[in-house]
Length: 611
Image (tube, rainbow, N blue to C red; front, side):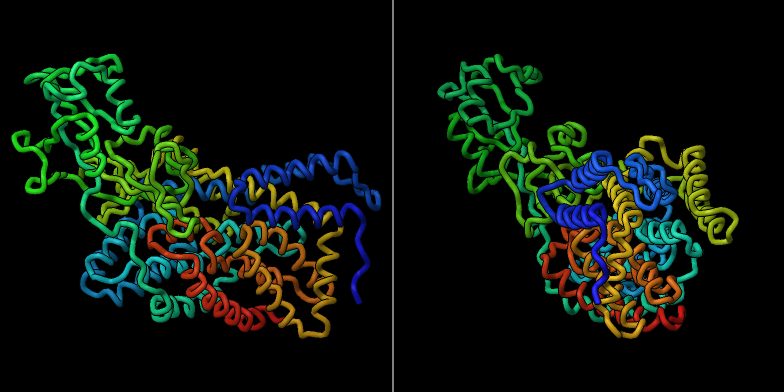
């Protein structure tokens, strides 16, 4: 028998949540914008239509409480701690050891890499772990002649599997545990559910080691041709040249503004300022950088002679082709905290700061498309890959900055003298919380303060670590969860689920809830799924007269199963780009892993948490 229909406010909240989940899946709408719209709708809606049931009033300002919620403060502190681990290279020795083992024992190294990724993710944010391991594994795949596509995706999924083992493994875990405690349930300790999670993770690691690489087809990486794509060259102006006697602006107009002049050389040692009014004379040499096709086109249009910069005696022809001595290509992945994220190449002054030229942009979500044309005006997003060319020194400088993920087959990682100190601070945070000396919110905040005091990271690094997207999705999700609980919407959904489950055993009811969360987390935000699912899980347990713990853990584990789609988790997008994967590859490897984890945890939870 279906439950009675809730009141108008609860129906409106349920409709808003349905709209929010739809907005979260829209590619063309920024997640931050969707979250802000949800918050505005809740605040304005409950202001225009006040809610009072049984003498209890839900004030619109209560929806802002998520910004000061214990879970959000903890998540932000842990993000900053993770940034400190990343910038100091605290895990670099382990990564370097894995890199050395790869050349001698690739099969064993694959297993060790998966174990390292899973265990580390139980204590650290998995984003810096993935960022650290990507260059190492790409370099190892080149040396061992193994396909990177068979290595990177299993590694990324291993971090997701390991992250569900502790309360601090993911922001999803923190939200579920904190909301359940707010609703009166016993607060889970850091390692309270580590045993079933570890057993299931062990099964998953074996699958990722032995089976997943066989399911993934060989993918050609973006960097298929290792020859330089851009060349520096000299354009010599002769007496009969179109350029002779004309201002630079007119010459550039002749090329429709495509040609970029780096410098103008006159005589033996004179360099002319690159002003639009500068008049080009016979004998001048224009230093330009572009593709071979464009350089030959400039030679034709401007009626000049093309020379290599290293050989000004012999014009470029079939016998003496263009050369780019000392130039290298590299893939640069736009990460969440990169200065390139939500910026254009021009706005970031990329060429001026690093001396690198962008040749193409690989858009992660557009099925491996390469974007060309005016690349400097394209707004970059997380997961985009820039194909850049420049000197080895320029690439080394960019990599050493620690702000950008450079995939150029090297294993150099940020490492400073502060690395042991950062590792010790993180260890102290974990031990303090695990031993019950202080809540994780307190220990993480204190650890963040120690990182800043000891200069393991700067305030600039700390600010970069904070993600507007994470903050808004957590705040909006908590607001939706509050509205769902206070208006009776959560109770209604719980009653509806129990009514649909009919006379099924409680084990199957719990298992079905976990599977529902697993499907939802691959379509919308995992944090939204967790916050909405937790009060429903407690309501289901109350309806059945059972302990809420296994149902809450079903939501926690299910919301962490972000394995099947690239957009399910931000690290999935990074791996999607770096490995040259297609959407179907995540389905091939992720769907079996989801089913495997669902079955394993459906069997394990009733053993450790009897229903």
